Structure formats: structure tokens, C-alpha cells
Length: 122
Length: 106
Figure 1 (cartoon, chains in turn brown, yellow):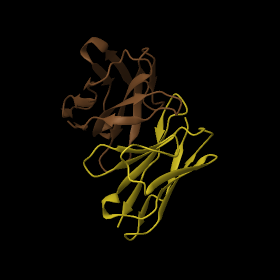
Figure 2 (figure 1 turned 60 degrees about the horizontal axis):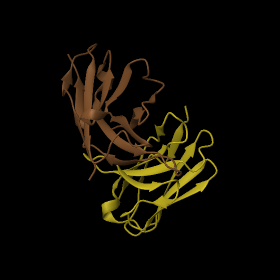
Figure 3 (figure 1 turned 180 degrees about the vertical axis):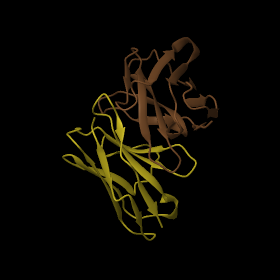
Figure 4 (figure 1 turned 120 degrees about the vertical axis):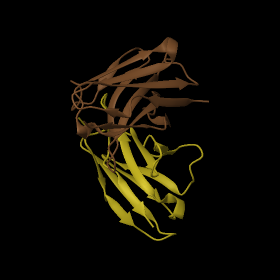
């Protein structure tokens, strides 16, 4: 059974670096075709895809945020970490991690964590 | 980046109505289009993938279609539990994007 759980600070100050950890079970990032993404959702607003790391360690970032994001995986710990530098109040959102898998039909988010609300405020 | 434009942004319909939501891609995305349902305070749930394939366990009143770069999600007979926000998402390019969402109210 696949589960994902996000963890990290609930409150960060402007200009600080935010570090979020996705701890998962039920699959391995060593499996060909596997990937994990981070997605966020500001209160009352739409979903925004942020970043993805693939099983082969390829990494992809949202164009608008790529200078501030770093995604990494630790296969031995079953974790994917997202760091976001220089946070601003507009980065206040619920942050989700989600598992994806590539096949002939493309890729989709079948499994999601419950999300973690991060507030950026002084 | 590929832009995904959903319409309408919100709609109100009655129980039993047929409801259609559209999602237009800014360029070709083949059939690499997914639909999600999100209820307040919950993570999104996958409904349809590859434009028209129903995810296991999803009621058959949900269906998806593709017309070039225009995609539709149809609920054939709206039920009270279908009150939610619906999002499309493309996985064609290496940088994925979501639509801005459509809120469905009864």
C-alpha cells in the first residue's frame, strides 16, 4: 500500500529557506518509471506543479520558480526533499507530494500525501 | 510552458444534470491529459487519465473526451457528492501544468 507524508515547518519567516520532506512507503524510487512531484496550493487558489524527480535522478522545475527550488531524493531513506530559498508571503500554501509513474499513457498523480500548510510571515 | 485553460471557472447545476467542463491546451499534448477532483481540505483524487481512461473505482458517470487540444470532463448525472473543484493536468512536456480549476456546486 502506497503512502506519502509531507513534513516541515508550519511557519517560516520571509527570506528564509524552506525545507520540506516527503517520506513514502509502498514503492521504491529505484523502480524504472517512478517519480515524485511537489505541488502546492495557496489558500483558495489552484494547484501549482513545482518540481519532479525521476527514478534515474533527472529533475525538473517549474519555470517560474526554478531559480529558488531544489529537489533531491534519498532512496535509502524513502524520502524526497524540496528546498525553496528566499520565501515570501505569496509562498504561503499547502504543499503536497505525490507519486507519479511513467507508462505508455503518460504519467499521472495516483497517490498523494495529505499536504502540509506552510505560512510565510514575520 | 504549456498553458492549460479551463472553463468555466465555476458552475451551478441541479442533481441529475449533465455537466461538462472544458480544458484547452496551448499546444498539442497528445492524449497526456489527466483530470482530478478535489474536495475542501482534501488532496486531489485522480478521476481520468490519458484523456479518457477512467481510474479504477471512479463512478462511470464520469467520462473524458479529446478533440485535438480541447479536452472535456463530463458528469452524466450530477450527484450531491460531486460538489468539488475539478482540475486538468498535462504530462506531455517535461514541465507539467495544471488548469486553474472549475468549481462545481449543486
